[in-house]
Length: 336
Image (cartoon, rainbow, N blue to C red):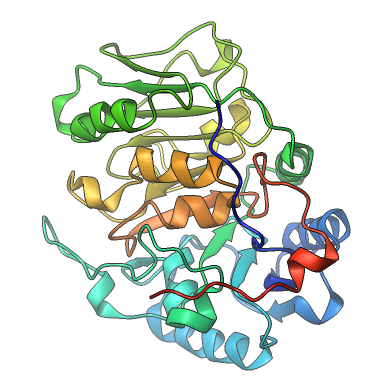
């Protein structure tokens, strides 16, 4: 039994701005493909000019660019999609959180320190910019244009498909990266009767064809090539630098997308193993099943997102009913 899709509104093409880097030929192609695939209004396409040959954009360069983006953003826009893979970091922040709230040192940390919390964590807002002046952001990232267009196709195919919501939560032998284990047990209890949640004490998952949710911990995750992810699937691994998209010391979250997931999450700066800096599985699953988009559900599951990178197809919504004209015009529920 799935959660009832009680929402009458979710983020749509009208609420999403696509930010394209005119100095990156791949970014231009991906933006054009995504705008066509999702019907993004022309006025919601924002062009920037930034280097595409570096992983980290200096904070002062980012801030100048971000001011230009804000001025060009229509008032109806509640979230951003970035159509590039580099840079994925802005100073000491992930570029997705920097776009969400602007560059702010309170979302950075050196060593094992907490960061400022997100006002979006497990919130009921349907209009994050209107409510808290944040525009949650997701990167359409990948190793190639073909990889990203395939990701976009999966996101579109996921809409209202309502696949069997099977979740796999792995407590691995890597104890330092299994700090979400208590959240796994809580998730299984809270979602009992609504879906199948398997909490497994093992290092890898293999030969499964119904992997809608997969959350684990480890430097590298093996067996991904044996799995099948339905369109719209979410998956990530708790480790220090999964969000370093082109790093080699730990597995990049791009491997999840290459295996068939539609969205993932990882950190770009050493976070230590605070579970608050990673998605809470019960929150993201519950909200996704209730009809939120991948961008909304993933963003609302991370309490301290300053160092974390969100990648995937933002509007993927496998458990939502089609948003008709009447629903789209309904008043948006505000945060209390």
